Amino acid sequence: MAHKIAPEKGFSLLEVMIAITLFAFFVSAYLTSQGYNVEDSRLSEEQLILQQLAERKINELILDPPKFSNATANLNETKTFEESEFKNYEYTLEIRKIILPDFAQLFSQKDGATKDAEESYEGNYFNENTTGQRNSELEKMVFNELKKNIEKILWQARVTITNKETKYKFSLSTFITNHNEKIQLNIGI
Image (cartoon, rainbow, N blue to C red; front, side, top):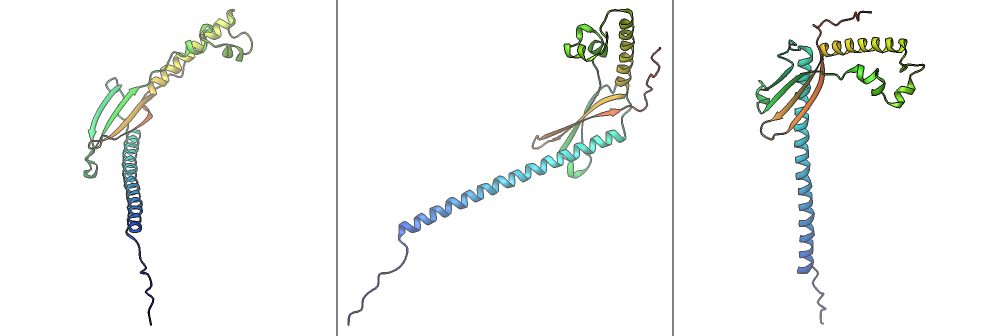
């Protein structure tokens, strides 16, 4: 009695090589994407720390504003944080006096007004008669006083946080109110 020998079952060398190549491709793609995810997470964490430090410094500045003077008008100082966990971070504080354009030229002179602005006023606003001239002069006085008052009480502040190792930066700006300044309410009418 002759036994029939069944052919051996298994994978050929070619099939094994194809399987290993596909497995290596998918593993390398997975590891690469995980590396990008880790890097993105690290950058997100860095941005969050920079933003939180900037918000903290701005809040400190709002709660305890500096003495406003001509020396403060162009303040630009860089300091490091005192806390040990933030020793790699430094902040730059910039304070500037706000400078507004001349309101009188922007709003009350006919030559500086656009056609839409001229049409938006009722009556003879830009008429050269005595009443129009008086309104224009009064408006110039009001705008000049408003400009002086705003420039006295509003200051611009910007905090820039920098990681000294990675050189990543984050800036945050705000306006600070000078509560000690007296504003002029009498315009001399």
